Length: 271
Image 1: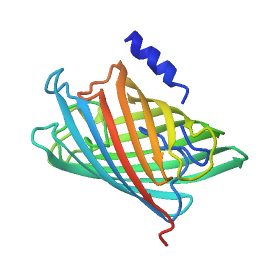
Image 2 (image 1 turned 180 degrees about the vertical axis):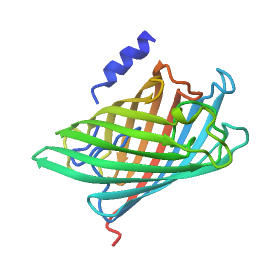
Image 3 (image 1 turned 90 degrees about the vertical axis):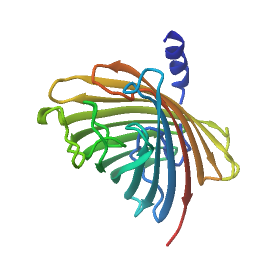
């Protein structure tokens, strides 16, 4: 644990290009480019305590992203996994983000955005924690604020979540436990290149994120730390590698620890 904490402190020298922020486990207030389309594939391996301490589950999450305008973007995602047995598709989600504030200066900017997510799943519900990315049907709404200072970006978010039934699979823990507040704090830094000479240069970003949730009824909460490394190729393709580790475990989850691998490609100026 001490070694892990030390590595996380060292990695807190952390993301982004001077043009925008690109975090791994959370969204910044900035949007993707207008009139652009992105294709994303997330692969997640999580330690599955539902099956035993040494068991792991695999989750595949393909998605499409659309930059409608400089202020509005949409994500459509599908989810499949083997947490409940055989590998099966179990639902999808719609994510919208609207940037309503932008204060730009030379080598810096401050932005704020509002976002919402709507998810539908048919999988078995087996934990108090609410997860709209692959587990719970429901909705979420919140705000994001992001400050970029040259090569350093810091972002924070807060949101309200409500879980509904997963089709015929009922939320078993009572109506009072259907609601939660989620929050995040992310920081990242562009490490390479030291100076830009071409858009074809590979970017290397390091980052760390703190992700948490608190149930509004009983006050139980969890908090994770998630260091990550990110590569951007030709200003179009993206590779993210991250690992999520729990720091606070007061709110029941069966999949709190795991690794993420993301592949993404973007098409610009489509119309």
